[in-house]
Length: 211
Image: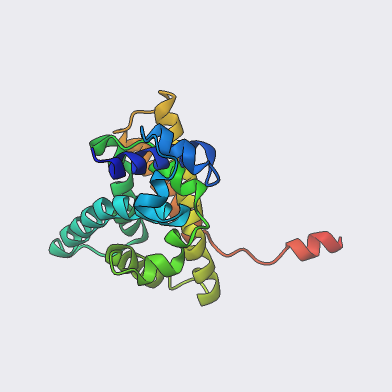
């Protein structure tokens, strides 16, 4: 691997384990770089490094998501919530099961508020067509929800997704689940679908507090 690739891998792992504020010199050292300024040399800044890690993984995810969307289109399959979530999430499971990448979900959990993974980055980025398509189709697949509530739930989805996937990665690391356990994949997708499709309950918190 090149020095740049080693830094990306070290950054992904250390940020996943220790958070965004991990010293850049620690990342450089973990990548085998003697120069403490190696990160700045290759990426310019901490933000540039985080963005590079995201874009590296997004390239793999984007290709696979587009493949899954194309398969559904060829089969003339309907765009249900579960099916759209599968196109979004299964490629993230496959990062570990097929590519041996075991820190990216925990990395995302740590940087979930970073501009590299915001709604704007996902919905306007030229390299994230699949995410934009899936989110727009999820919006159309939830017509029973009021528009404002539907928007809030879709905006909450990445936070819940990153957290559940990070827990899944930890379970794999602790040998509590196999990386290719598709039953565990389905259970997680069911939970995400529940977040989006939960029925709207009649207001009651205000009444109970008054009582």
